[in-house]
Image (cartoon, rainbow, N blue to C red; front, side, top):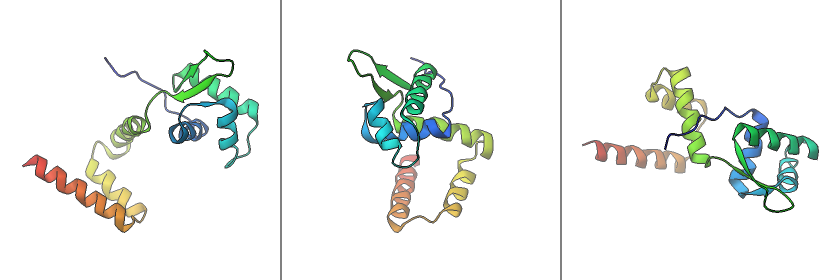
Length: 129
């Protein structure tokens, strides 16, 4: 089955997707309550955004109950892979090396994050031999 091409979410849509990825399927009211903790937005704005996101295919909507329940159409890890692949191609001309170097140079990683990166690199080297 071919992966469907989904549009890139706007900043606001990504914020809503983040709520759904963290909390799982939610009603509009539940998304609104959490979304409104970090940015002041009206209930109807969140409702409209979710409706638009459903039309775009970014979220799915369960209409079997009185209150509709929305959930992200893609798992967070799959969405990250898709958008990272696009960024890698457009900005870094397909060079994972350049992307990783820029990422590590741009923001300091914690010792735990560096250990996890080292472990991943070690696993990749073992698998490549």
